[in-house]
Image (tube, rainbow, N blue to C red):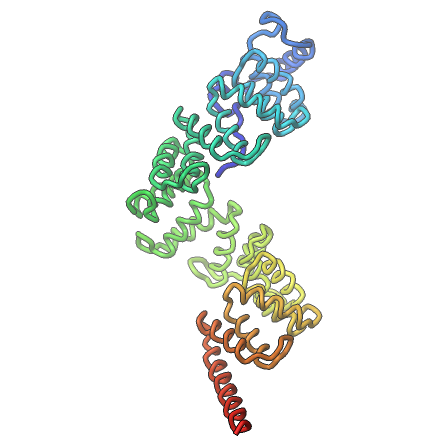
Length: 434
């Protein structure tokens, strides 16, 4: 969900004052008039509330030295005290964000509530977000839902998306896929990209509505045209796999490239894989490395693992175990099991780091806890031979069985070996007892 605040200056009220066409002298005159005002005492002194609201917008959005949030706040406050609902909202946002005034969330809530009480749907949504996320008020999902609903029923597209999101995830209300779809559709029809993608997801998966792959693609494309990266990435996945359509590698790469150029980490990593393998694009390890690095810089663990593997094996780069360890660790600390295993392997063998069997075991255990078969096999071997762990054929067999269940072919032979050992041990003990 979009958790930002959209400015009233982006609403219809902004159209009343074309600040882009204002001249520098008009702005200077307005600021001089603002300086002469101590407090709003009469309509004749204050002038039109719209004027001061628009002046605040101009000062807040001006470029260079003309931008002045303090003066913008003063202008908003004058209009707000004259009951200008959009100005009240801007004052509330200024207090919440500390723009032009010392941040004071409680005052921010007060002014947002005044604006909402006058019918500002934007302020209703802002208040809803404050209640949902506990900003300036105690978190209250039910109150957030009520505010979203007020704005949504008044036709505010962003609040309609928020309300759909709440129904989809059961926030402040019992989850209802059909209600989520209803509100996603209302918002999507007004052009909200996130709602278009959410509706597409429901159509793609048959959630709250009959599954319809072609309608899903149409809504994903609508969102993708607006630059929504997750929609572009999803379309790439659909066209790669041929989900509901004929596979189209060219179209898939087109959408993947758009998402990657938009700094979407998953797309950057996948496009890197395409360049690594020459899949849909000319093979280029240099470009693959570039996209892996871009995704890794965003802390995307799969790309960090890829870089670790490349440095460990000298793929597209000079082999460098220290760099491999650095990238494996970055991914491992985020919980990526194969990175945890490979980091354990580096510790076990002293590759790029001082050899440390205890650290190796800790990373193997972390990966094994996630069902990573290579680590399960490694721990099983330690129990079998009694290295770093007390010898236990029974526990060794348990870990070997887990590795086999998770697809490790070598685990079957390890189990047979343990069974032979235990059989021989049993026979020996029986003979000694006789």
